[in-house]
Amino acid sequence: MGEEKKLGLLPLIALVVGSMIGGGAFNLAGDMALGANSGAVIIGWIITGIGIIALSLVFHNLTTKKPELDSGIYSYAKEGFGSFLGFSSAWGYWLSASLGNVAYATLLFSSIGYFLPIFEGGQNVTAIIGASIFLWTVHFLVIKGINSAAFINTIVTIAKMVPIFLFIIIALLTFKWNTFVFDFWGNHGFSWSSIVEQVKSTMLVTLWVFIGIEGAVVMSQRAKKKSDVGRATVIGLISVLIIYVLISLLSLGIMPREDLASLPNPAMAYVLESIVGKWGAIVINFGLIISVIGAWLSWTLFAAELPYITAKDKVFPRFLAKENKNKAPVNSLWLTNGLVQVFLIILLFSESAYYFMFSLASSAILIPYILSAFYQVKLALTEKTYNKESNGFKKDFIIGMIASIYTVWLIYAAGLNYLLLTMLLYAPGILLYKWAKKEHEIELADSNLDKFFMIAVLILAVLAFYGLIIGKISI
View (tube, rainbow, N blue to C red):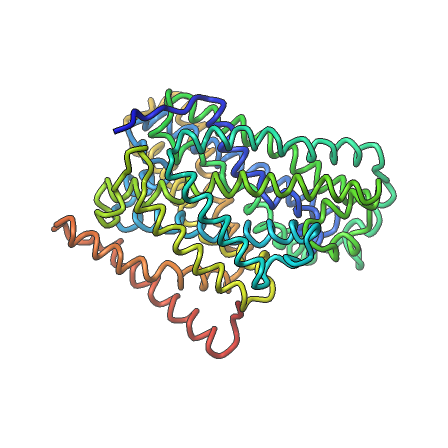
């Protein structure tokens, strides 16, 4: 058996930054402009900034206060709310990671299509074949070992920041204030109802580009020092937040919102092309290709890690706990990338593949995020971890409440359709949960809370299926 090498602070930061700054960063300005003007975008970033920082601090606090829960985001839900919600947290995270990789595949080959028209659009037959080849190349790279893949991700993360910083510098120099403030609140001026709808439209976009803040937490078992996990999460988050705000706001000062919203993927390439000419689009598209490759690699690591961890913890079926001689979760990798391959084929029958897949990935991960935030609140209120007279208890309770409110708001902002479609994906997990309990000979009966949530998931899944049949919900 090969000796497992642990990850230091820099690779952990690279995993966090690399997983967040994927394809979404390069199309962020266009996705934000689809439903919001400059004023609403600013409000959306204020809400997102407060909420996402609180959520990152939740992960930081939990790794500090509960270092024994080294299974990360899944273990918080299980410890706080029981086995079924723990399972659901892992299941939802795994689904989100898999769907995210499908979105990355679309964006990657859309960008390659800028140079090779045979892949144009990112979801024709040729692009799906190319994405499938890349999928299995990454698969066998990760099978070689988690540490070698993480090292490659560190190099890729550094390389892909170059075109992003180039864009920010040029956009700062050419920013037009009059363009930015034109139609600041929308065609009909300021109104609360309009602003709320505009801000809601930005929420899944901003959540999508921040998915990955828990990346170091997911890999916490493989970290050299547990203290590095929380530090990597906070450092990565603050750095990426600044970059995202600059990308989206500066773009609104380069061209009008309507023009920005109508740009093809990746919007950043065409914004820079409008300033400096064709070479700008070439640089950004190359950057996007590097970026998506890195993010795809990161999310392959995360997606494979969760079934492996939960199988070891007797929540997922036993066969997913198998490692190869390089300490890679080999069966979990096969299952994960097999699912991604199925979704890649489904892309051929979907019209707006990238937008749909990233929205569904964002919606699927909300359950793990919500349960982590709720556990922070529960921990502050009920555990002896805190001295109830200290400011630490009050601070962590407030952070947990802010993160909880933010994640609940995200469900409201995403809308009913995405909630129903997400439950359609969660429902098959109940069968896997029951199978795993039987296989591991766990005789403990499900709690009333477990049964309630199982029934709720099934009812919402049936409603989603009915909505698809009658055409009220579309894919």
